Image (tube, rainbow, N blue to C red; front, side, top):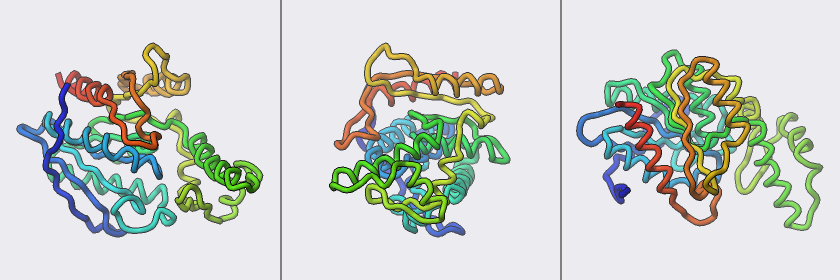
Length: 278
């Protein structure tokens, strides 16, 4: 399947109560079939995913779905420093972006999240006064506490490579955050408020009130869905949500040091959205 190599997009800043936010808007081609707000991953995963996000936005827009990509507070080209961002502030950013594209296209928008961005999208769907039209989840992080531990281990690994100690492990770093101190990790300043919000986020405890399209990227064909993902999807179904899970084979581009594409992910995304509209 061929995907658009280039499509025009409108780049602009929008003033919000928390400062200017950078938006990139891909208008739907032809008749509008819907709208999505893209919520990017955490820290360096955001930068490593930019190409796939751009390819996805162009492909979706070509199929009549308007897409708004935003940079959250302290990320990318938006105002503020990463060290000043908060979990609740990021949720406000998502709500404001959704309001913008809904006003632009006069429809109820969905959310498209990658990794921690998917966890934020799920939390927004659970808390919003009006549920989003749908959730498109790419490789969602389902447990914020586990993800936080992995991020903290980057700090420990860096200390060991530099010939120092490991700061007493992740528990010691958690104690530093609990005492109200920020921590520098891989070039990012993690503040206690952001860490606490991520730590408390558990997808299994949330109940999205809209259709969910979950696409999981597997390193090799034939591998089963991770048990944690199975538990979350089953829990959501028991809560009454429609959950369609799709598995594709491809590279984990969000963690790759070089830029890599995952065409199977794009193809599965278009196919599941096309099927849902049928």
